[in-house]
Image (cartoon, rainbow, N blue to C red; front, side, top):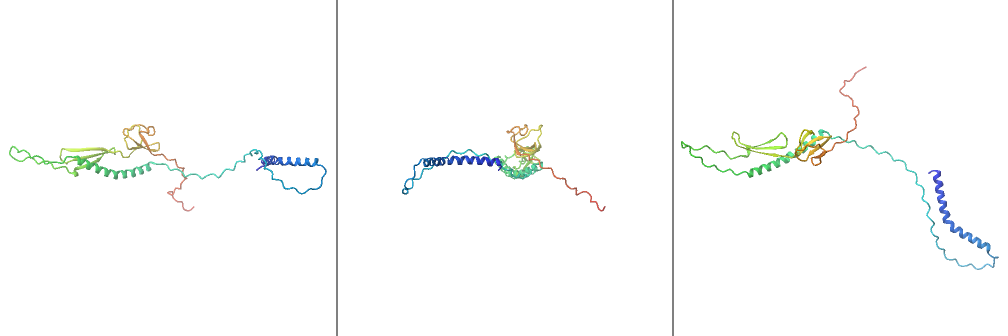
Amino acid sequence: MNTKQLDSIAEVVSLVVAESLAPVLQRLKALEELRTKAAEPGQPGRDGKDGADGRDGKDGEPGTDGRDGLDGKDGQPGKDGVDGRSFTIEDADALLSEKMARWELDFERRAADKLDAAIAKMPIPKDGRDGRDGADGKNGADGLDAFQLEDAAFEMQADGRTLKILFQREGDAWKYTHAVKLSHMVYQGIYSEAKSYDKGDCVTFGGSLWHAKHDAVTAKPGTDEDAWALAVKKGRDGRDGRDGVDKSAPVKLGG
């Protein structure tokens, strides 16, 4: 605290003390005037009784506000935060691999349920009618054997999401084929304006990973909220590393 501030405080304290003592000083002055005007002293009288206590004086006017104190010193600077870690294509590949492994387990269960339901809807084979007698009176050709589950095959198409279920008999002309389109996540690489993406396709754009929300998506990621969903946001760039030591260089011996 400097001298100027101390002078200001002393001035305020003097004003407060003067205002508080003003009534007392006035009474003392009045008593002195009465004493001057009094007659010659008479015979001493007996001691009078103590007078009643006087009333408390009124509170004085509030003093003016003091000046603001000086600003305190700045605190110690905080520590640097931990560097962020950029999300790389390798990280996306590891994430998708984990998701695909979980999907494959779930898909096997769902595919088995769908296959059982499809087989349950098929009509139960019945015995064929007896063939007609040939011209020479011989029996007709044997009928085909009933369909067996072992004759089914599953083929995943090139798009990575269309599963083709094929029921056929080797050497026979008839077959039954059914295709199921799945919406699981499939990584399609870096986004290309020349391609159309289906629901479940994942692309890299602007350093982030985006997930298509419906089929036939052509808009750029980040421009249509109904078309793309942000799956993994781009991380901050890490700090530059320090120069390393080339340990593969030959070691010089002697002078």
